[in-house]
Every structure is written in structure tokens, then in C-alpha cells.
Image (cartoon, rainbow, N blue to C red; front, side, top):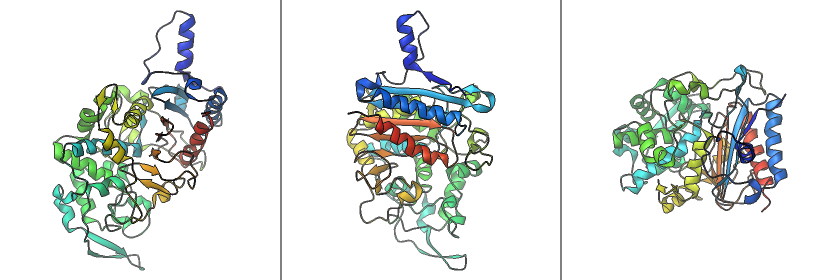
Length: 424
């Protein structure tokens, strides 16, 4: 099977020697990988890896974007956007971002923080009074639960660092988990924003706020909180405060029908389980702009977003956040007093701390993922991944439609390939 691969680097090389149409604009200035410290052999290994995965029918295709020192050194499309129709993957393919949405939700919230409107210690009951009377749950041995008064209100910081106690129902089997929707996407398909807030406020907290990292609905509530502050949809807020400034023209919560052919589709059958697989949001509308997992976007858009953060909050002269705010976001907010369960959700992130929507590396080693102290990351359940390494001055975005457990393998394998290709 021949790999379908689109390379803008090869297009530029060709156009240097013959008359041809200009290739599509790239999201950032191009540079040869070798000029920024990547080995030619290492880059070949990266391309060969994706070729093999596509040839073995383990993934339909992918788009990989890597920046080093602010230059786009890898920007490749591999395989198929839709294998069922033999539609080749292109760099402008639109992917369902899943939980990579969370990072954008936190960034837009931090723009309100910079305006003095969103103190991190403030209780969310200032916007949603329903949470004032929320109880703390205690699972019983008989499949039931009891409740008790909750002494610690949920803060804005708790929403961003996953210490709110508002768990995902799909993350456990206790009777408390059963009181919650399974996850962000499920909630957005079933509830509008008002109904979700009422549902969450009526559920017992899994943990006392500020005591335990537990993956859940914090960023969805944060998105709805922003909507209440601005009296606008989260999509409008992000477009004004992030996407228009960064140049993310293909990112949104509601994609037009004209873009439907650009969506990436997974293989019909999970190659590990041989069971049917799909991405629900490709066919099902949402009832609210869920800040925890419902945005779409391209690799080109997200690499610009990641570069903006690595730059300290600005890109091409347009500022989204101040550098000190970005530094606050990408620092560990768990410390030693909060129970750290990050590795329960991301097994390879052992001993990572957690900032405001991103996991943050505290040690070189311990974790099975390569990188440097201070790197930060978060990924998406449908196969998208993102990490930034300030020490290497590098951002990596890989987009794929692989909703099964293979996505977890790819997080480690792609990480290994990228770092192995660095020569200096």
C-alpha cells in the first residue's frame, strides 16, 4: 500500500526549480528541520512510522505539525482523511479536538482574569448560586451513597486544575459517578448549558474541592461561567479573545456544512478490538458550547495557538495573554497537599503536576514520556495530542481520528520519535 503524504516542503522545493502555482500558506514560517537541530535520519523515521501505521490499517491518517525556535519544521499530512472514500489527508483537514478544547477554554478565561473580572479564588456560586448548597458524597458499601455538608466552595482555580470534585460519570463505577453524565461530549448532546449546571449542582461532589485532582466537568462549567459574564456564546468569546487574534480561522464549536467534507473520520472498526468505532460529534449536534471537549480545528490552527502560548501569549504582534499569565497557567497548581491522580487519566504522566488546564512536568524521568522539566501538555480522546517544551523551544501537534486505545500508544510513540530526532 502506498502512503498518501502531502509535503509542503517538497512543494516549495519543486517550485524553486519549475514554474508552478504557489502552495497553500503555512501557519508559521517554514525552516528545514536540520537547520533547527533535527537530524535528517530522525525525520525520516517519523515519516516512516506514520507510513507503516497507515499501511497496516491501524490509523486512517494523521497531520503532524512541529515548530522549533518559532519555525515550522514539520508540517505533513499522512494517509487518508476518510479511508472509506479514499479521500487523502491534507493539512487543512478539520479534527474533533475533544479535551484539547480545555486549554483554549482556560486561555479565554484567563483573559477575563487579566481584566480583574475573574479572581481564581472566587467561588463559582457567585455566578451559579445552585452550587451554594451542593453536598459532599460518600459511597456506601451497599451501592448507595450518603451526603454531608460541603465546607469548601468550588473556586475558579478548582475548575481549571480539576480539583472541583465535579467528576466525569464515565471515569468510575461508584454510585456517585452514576449521578453525573459520562463526559463533556455526552453532556453537550443531552443538555443545554442551564440544564447541565442544574444537573451538576444537584449531584454529590466526589471529593471536597481543592483536595484531589480528578478529571471532570470543571472546564465545561468554566465555559458556561464565561458565557454568563459576557452574555455571549463561548464560541463568540473565543473568536473575539483568541481565534481572531491568533489567526485560527478553522476553529469553532459549530462548523458550516461547506466544511463537512474536510472532517477527519476514524476507521470503521477499531484495529485493536475489531469493534465498530465512531466520533459522535461528526454526526450529532451539541446543545451548548462545551468547553471541556466539543471544539473542532486543524493542526495548523492549533500549532499557532501552541506557539502563541510558548511565545508568552502573543503571536505576529497580537497579544492574547501577558507572559506572566502564561507562566502562571503552565506552573504546577497541585503542590504537595492535593492528592495527585493525573496518572490515573494519563498513565504515562506519572509525577506530572497540573497547571490551569495543562499537565506540567516536575521531573526529568519518572514519567515514561520524554521531555524536560517545565514541558506542558494535554491531549484529546479522539486521537489528537499537543505538548510544548519551553527548554527546547518546541511545540508539537498531532491530529488523528483514532478514538480507541491506540491513541494512548501514539502519545508515547510520537513523543519518542520527536525527541529521538533532536540532535542538539
